[in-house]
Amino acid sequence: IQSGLAFLIIFSSWFYGGVEIQNQAVLGLAALLLLLVWLGRRWLVRETDFVSTPLNLPLSVFFLLAITYTLLSVYRHASLRELYRFFPPIIVYFLAVNNLRGKASLKRFIWLIVLIGTFYAGYGLLQYAGFIPKSFWTDKSSLASRFVNSNHFAGFLELAIFATGGILLFESKVWRGLLAVVCLGIMLMAFAYTRSRSGWLSLIIAMVFFGILLIHRKDIISRRRRSLLSGMAVILLVIVGTFGYATIAKRLEQIRGTQYYSVIQREHIWKGTLTAF
Image 1: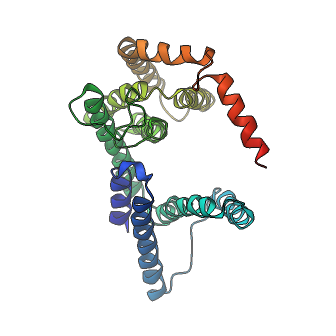
Image 2: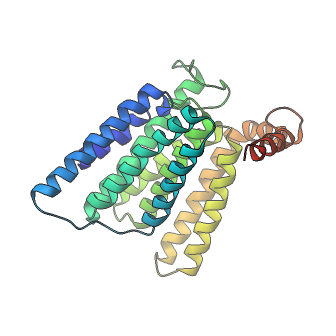
């Protein structure tokens, strides 16, 4: 099951971020097959216990709301297509929390996410530099790696960046810590070139929240490691700011304009969306 989860995570993004319906169908069937195999194995050994997490209830409510809105939707075909997109991630989450119970398996899974994020970030930087084709990007000036949309890729990188942060907090081996720093630097550089303003904002908010937690829970890590991580964070931010400042500044400047990417145009889109209800 763990190998199957690794397969889904590795290849789900390779097929253009899984945005095409044929790619979603393959990934959905693979996730469903993995779930049936796991349930069948549990039935054979008569295991009936399931891991309970705080996310079980919100996911269940969200899924019921999605089904309800799909049944009442005016655009039934589009709603069914969006509903289908929810199945694979929920199945992967359910399988992960029920199969990754040991500390060793969790650690391997976290490293897998970090290495995948680093690979796609490096691949995207090579595309951005012109060494690898990027014809499927919706915006050729925004790094998207194997994803079609740079905003989607930015969201993916955020997951890998914080997984790397967890490794830096608790990894005891020096060489693994240094490897995590290198991975973090590559992902942050790619993250800057995604030109995703929503991604930048959400990362900053999450980092502030994470920092507050560390301040109030000083017992989690030692003062020496906290100081070391703070220093590395400053160095990485300086490096990213030095090489990506022009890209970031130009992207933020568009907020004040009147074109599609500005706040003014986004307000019109939001108002139009509200009228759909």
